Image (cartoon, rainbow, N blue to C red; front, side, top):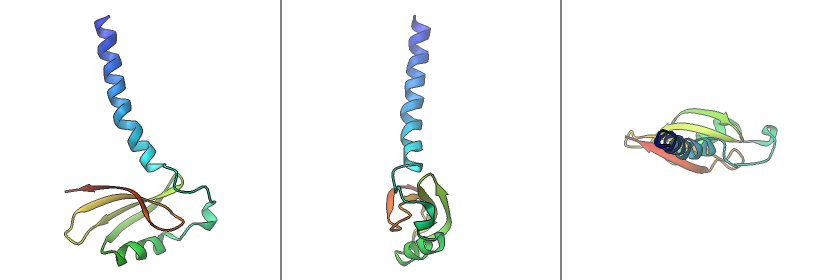
Length: 94
């Protein structure tokens, strides 16, 4: 019985970490078809005006995933709405 509880706790812990990350990358940015999305270079330009140095923009689910550096060189991974270019969620790294 104790082995089952340990396995169950481990499975719940993995799910608690993995589910928010997968939801973040494939969140509900838009239901519009990709033909109506901003181009990735437009998203880059918009974020560069805000001071980011954009390294990569890629479609991820119904969002864009953007990898960029801020003015101080700190790395950022952002989920961006492809209709307006605004970040939906962001994770900064040292």
